[in-house]
Length: 99
Image (cartoon, rainbow, N blue to C red):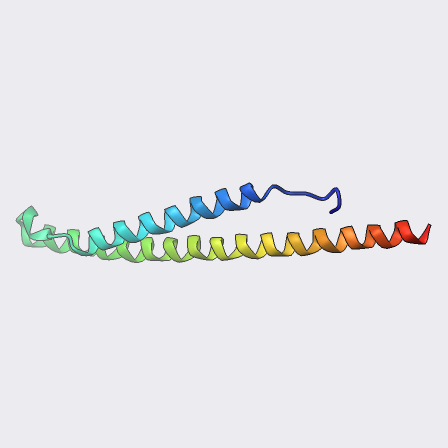
């Protein structure tokens, strides 16, 4: 291997963190979707609470998608970095043989 190194635990930690965020966002979205707005009483307030839950549910779903996308990107970065590291190591071997 070459001197170009990045500890795999960094990628594992990032994936774990973003996966956790994505899971928590989905749990929150489900909880909002099941909100019983009738508990607030007044009809206009019930409607406002339902609208709020719907809007936040959509926003949370979007955040979940983005964190899931971040996990995919972290995986891709890790794979690319590993490939570049191997290429660099091979190029150093070739240069040493050429001396």
